[in-house]
Image (cartoon, rainbow, N blue to C red; front, side, top):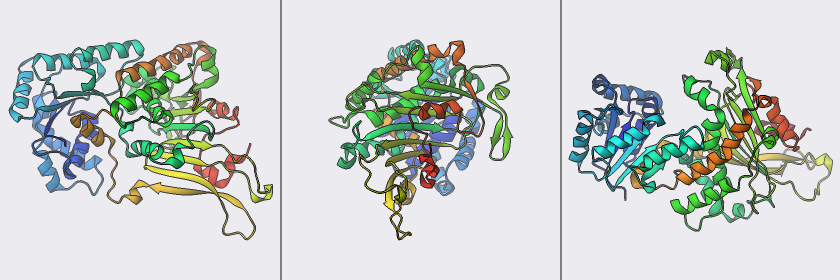
Length: 495
């Protein structure tokens, strides 16, 4: 049972706190998941912010919560849990002592320190927590991505945090792992024999994992140009999703067993180095185009300077073990894409022997589609007789489980789930230090190869599906990126 806890948000007036963290904690309060006596302590950069904080956070909540979620009486009750304080993270002064006095007066032994800050201040923040005596045996620290720029810098950051917190008290967050559909992927695989027995190279043709964004830089120009899509999205979100798809069944659903199986996947990824990078990866950078009927600028226009930073990545990856031998995993992410979505597509092999004549229609493989956003759903594409025709005609149909339709009170909130897990000390959906190291070990050689002059990013128009080279990479394997509209129209069978 979750005990009362103090939740300290460093960077409590920042965008993440206002858009995700505070609304998530409000949802937990409304559903009764926050134990009585739990307090939320956001830190602000000056005293004026502290004075205006409750008004500002209420305004943000009304904006970012769903229309039927914000209830004035519930918010007023929740606001009693908010204790904003002024703390300059970089300066050890009397305000840290005031924070210590506030925490020590509450009587809560459970403490969560959420570092919603740039990684450059992780170390000094942990140092000041230690020097002020705020780190107890029941304290945890939650750190946001990105954890480093490469393996070396990630190791430095992890080592600095480890000076003050033990590994089992460090919670590296990836909000994609908190999505209910992602968690349901484990239940789908390991609690249903019909899927677990069809989850290997004997049955599966290939896997696609896509995270497609319609936004551009959104004020993140300096960070993004120093990172790019590979570091920003593939190294963490996409590789974590790949691990959950490909991992072996843990003998128990505990954090240690789940992490051990995910680590095996990362260690079995076939290395991409040197010339193999050229043939198995595609870099892209968007140029001016049309989005929603409006012209939008290209990446370089938004950035205001020359750059080879990629805004799109496609990778053909393989996992060298017996379960996934020679099954390609196609990974894709990009900005200024035609549509916003995140999904996992498991495409099964076609039937071994076709018993229906060609006149009955083209063959369509079965697919399992796990949609993570904007809606959360699971779809199965299967072949059925067209019941509107007398003669036998086969067509693909969709079995659809949309969680919002099935669960009427369902509001998916990944941050809410992960914050409560951190408070409870449940690390199942968080990332171990060894996973970070293994992910960078696979990513770094790709980054190194991309520094060659011949590996400059391909241009693609904003509002498109990315560079043509991405489609060509799959076409060389006689495959194509999944589109449910093309499947249902039969267009994906045309070569």
